[in-house]
Image (cartoon, rainbow, N blue to C red; front, side, top):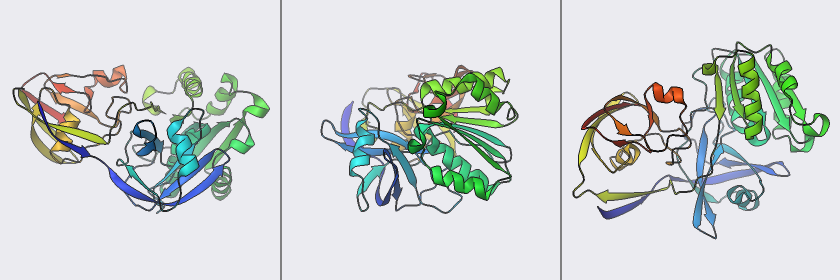
Length: 339
């Protein structure tokens, strides 16, 4: 294969404002109004002295239902290069390149009640879902929010405001490690026991999310009602697409259904589906391009593929025919895929 082009993906967004939420966390408000779903995230291209740029994913705290612009919240972490750079350097007027909003940590609808679990900066996508639920539905929402101490509670005043405005629909329980230690199974069980008929959304540190999942499983909450957001550090560069000219490689034919439109494309055997779609100018969902985030998950209706790395998919997803477009390569001549 012969390299003919390297394309830089994403769009440049100007920062409108930077809000200091806590001593270690800031919200970055972009002067942009891109379409997105509550609970999704942005992938930011952040300058790096070592590698030129690094890519990092940050959840949107804003709600598409309240008329607010894109807002991500970033918390400083130990040895967290991207987060620490943003906390130290992001300012109004600066421009950052971002990929389109992405992610599957979002409710299918708001016609059912919700129980939301957040730990630390995991409150960010939870706030997006909470704000949207209160603004667009009559759903009742319970929020369990764990933090180290009161000073580290992100959106503390906003949560108080929302709870005061919606006293019959919103209940927020703060769990502070400084007062009660780490969240205990008994404490989580006591909070969740009255919400077993609700859809649950969980975001936070790994041990916290695992503890919540165990409690919900013990309570018999169906797996399909439990949604967990897991981020992995990106090692590659999802902003750069190398387009090769195929010489001797064989190609399959793929029919892709996306947003109600049908696309029929040649799919070279050494290319991933997402690269084929991007090269063809098809606006397909993707983010990390490393098989970690699940944003590009789609259903293989016909044909076979080499799935590549698909750690973002559960065994149930695989059994249902899901593949990751950023990883899959064709192994049959004709394929059909649906997003």
